[in-house]
Image (tube, rainbow, N blue to C red; front, top):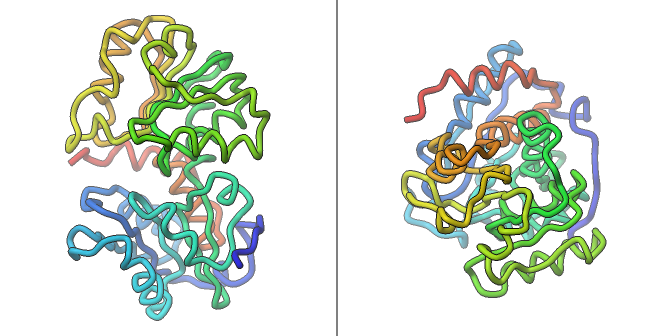
Length: 299
C-alpha cells in the first residue's frame, strides 16, 4: 500500500550528507530538456558535483511499461532520484512506496526520491506553477478561470489554481472523460462548487477572467493554438506551461489583444528548484536559476 506523507525537503537526513549526486529525467521525447543544464549549473554554484542523465523512452524504443525496470536500474546505480515527465507522471504512482500529500491529491508525480530503500513521490509542478503565477501575474483576477488540459501537468496546474484562490475553475480536455475524472478527484479536496467540466471552451472563455493552457499544443512538435483565436478577448490573462518555445502562438495571439501573459519558463525553473532540494537536501538560489535559464539558448 502506498503511504501518504509530507516529509521535509531541505535538511532531511541522508541526501544532504553527500557531495556527489546522480539524478535524471525519464519520459518521452526529452532530448531538448533544459533540466540537465539547470540542475548541473546550480550544483556547481553550490560547490557540489551533480550528473543529470536523460532516460528517453522514445530513444530506447520503450513505453511506460519500462518504468519499473528504469526505477530499479536507477536505484541499483545509486541515483538520488528521478524527475518524471510525460507520459509517466501517473503511471509511476503504483511503483512507489510513499506519496507526498500534494502528489496524492493531484494524482501525478514528477519527482521520485530514492532514500533508505524507499521510493518517495512528489509533485513539484504545482508549487512551481503557483510560484511562477504569483511572480508573473500579481493581482490577476481569479473569479472564473478556464483551464485547457487535464493530464498530469493539468492536474498540477488545476490544484495550484484552486490553492491560489480561484473561485470557479472550468476544465476542458479533448480526451473523453479526462476532465470529469480530474474534477471528481479534486472535488475530494476542494469545495465541488468551485469546479466544473467545460463542454465548450469557447463558451466558457467568454465569461472567464483567465486562461490556463496545460497541453503540448504550441510546442515546436505540436504547433498551433489550443482553441480558435477568435475565442480570446482582451479582458483575459493567459498562462502557459509550454516553454519550447517560450513565446507560443497562444501567447503571441493573446499579447496582441492586450492580454497579460505568463510563459512556461517560470514553472520549469521553480519545479526544478524544489526537485533539486528534494534530491540533495540543499537549498537553491531561485533567482540564480532563473538567470541561468534565461541565458540558455532555446535550441
